Length: 102
Image (cartoon, rainbow, N blue to C red; front, top):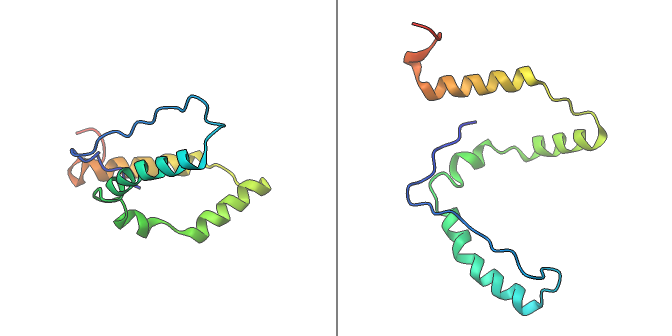
């Protein structure tokens, strides 16, 4: 999985904590939803927000992993994670940088 650099037009999303978040009225919740809508639209309009990432998502696989975690059967394999990270770095560096030292 590759992580693309942030879009130059992207601005960070900041959220101020509510003074008393336990007591939120329906009107407050509706107002927050209205305020969040433009930000949500902005995030979905970013390049790559849905395209390739949606194609890489396998809901059945996620459900199977989630069930394995709940049942205590999921095992983390560090060597597989390391291999994936190294392959990603090699891909980012390009075909001219294979092998390491020159």
